[in-house]
Length: 283
Image (tube, rainbow, N blue to C red):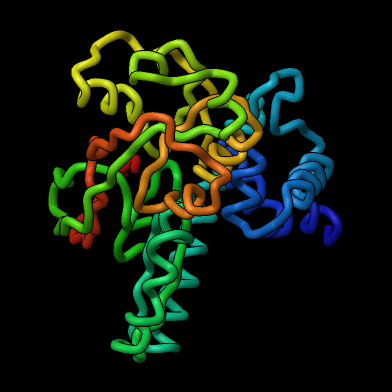
């Protein structure tokens, strides 16, 4: 009986790894969220599959795709894990005093937000900050979040929305790629591989429209985070869009070139949400 009970209760580490991979549809993005190596996440998922005796992902696909068993399992354990997180945050809040549970996009948090946290801590030393990175869908009530910083519009019913900043965006690539693919005007970019980010859908379309160019934008590789986009650019695979609030440091290190010296405002501002009765939202 004890052996059966243990088999029916996988480790929370394995469940968290499976949940993150399924949500992001990416082992690398899940590893970033969990602060683990991609190999460690893969081993956790493999261990869970062995324990359950079922394949949770379709290994025949190039993409990370849930199997039917994985889809059913995620629907069941996803809310349970979110409830555990929320309960843990609630207990921690009661024990430690005032807390702020904040969600943000990974690259934005690392490049823009975290360097500004020391000033906040100095001004409000009694507030405990809990951070969570989110790329896909999040739920304030279920996940115990107090606020989120994301890309969007201030149109969330029953929530207080505060404008934080505008983003400016411009195309970037490696110096070697630019040498092999000279760019003399924005139109030249339409014949090049253009990388897309999951957190900023339509960024290229908006950039071209801001310049009066309505030609359909060709599809390209899609990445979860700018760190992956920048690495693909450095490797000479194509052109990425640089959002200057979070990725300008790459330009200062000369690892990326700025082929068209035209910036435009991003389609959406970064907004701070302070929800009252929040609903699900995709940042």
